[in-house]
Length: 121
Image (cartoon, rainbow, N blue to C red; front, side):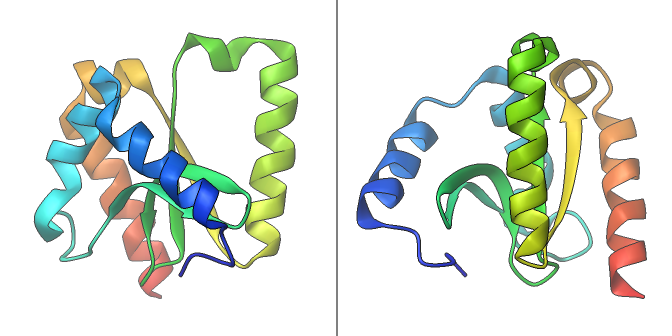
């Protein structure tokens, strides 16, 4: 489930959970306690050499929330390399914009349900 994440990375994930962004807090309220499709999501989860925003082990699904920093060219390039690396581990990565999470939570839940339905096939 952790893909050989180091204790240091697991400690970092724990610290990040304590300092979540508004969008992370809002998304967590949407998915916690098996609220979407009956699936358990973990927040700020250590995975190999990364800490992903949200992770559902049963679906092998990573959810990343992107704020405006992700519009920068070097950040986009890093995100792409990271996503490809995670996908090489056999996982699916989906990104949501922070604004959608904060301003259109019903849309985000609907999108997540569609992603889950496709992964269940």
